[in-house]
Length: 218
Image (cartoon, rainbow, N blue to C red; front, side):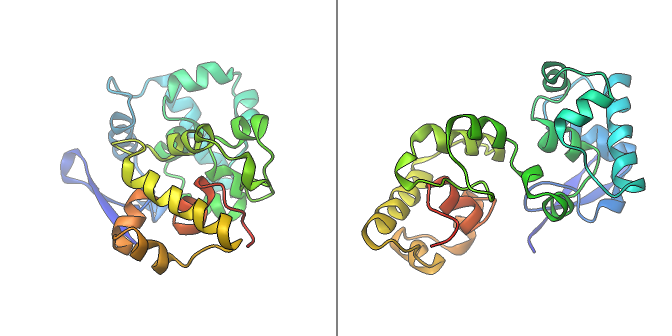
């Protein structure tokens, strides 16, 4: 699995997975939390209000082996969702949970929805299957794509390279009712596997195919 290194003050280095989450999670310390917070748009550092919520998440993670859904987490901490968003501008899972050192792999294992930050917003507008994919291929639109891209914190947002892959996948599926192999998609778009994974950090099926509105089963 692809790994990255985050270098912080005091000469500390932390291993991150390809989604930018701490992995393995036992590396966590307060230095990591402060460093990650700055990277996630909290430049003035963590306040006691931040720390209270982070400690709550770590207690749930370490002692109970779980991550509460955002509504429950807010209720147990007396926070409104708007206040949580103000504290952690990149979101609950990709903000608070990431700073608290909870790994992406753990969240994916215990509850797949924890890795879909925009699931609730998407479900309000689109019919999704239990895996978070569109139920109806024809229901796809650019807004669906933008909702998902916002989860990924891509430095350059949605680029033409993304759009070329998305258009290819949709046209291929429309003609064949099948999903092309990852190798066919790379070849048709003149890109390497590494570039594809960089464009779609959630992977080929859960990233590229999902964002293009293709079904989970095909």
